[in-house]
Image (tube, rainbow, N blue to C red; front, side, top):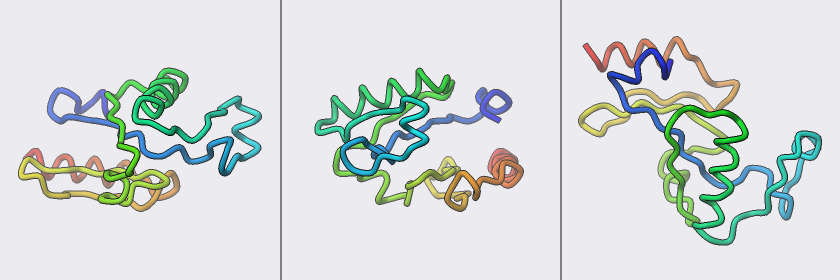
Length: 117
């Protein structure tokens, strides 16, 4: 969808708090996949972890990083992950259910088309 609409809409991924840091709540899948990050203690550390995730996962979208106070996550209920469409007036035009199981790409596509027409 990013490739299809990126010339007409701005897409961003917002990196929020680390879901399964080794020092708080590690999961076996992260150990197996070698996704082993401590909970960042500074904005700089969070940016470094976010950059590693973007690179290692091959994410093409531009990435933004939430602050250590998790302001964006709190304002947008972003944990564990969620899709949003913000219209040109700054209003929420679409909000997915929590992902990844709540992601409905066809719903987001329909909302994009509504906003662009």
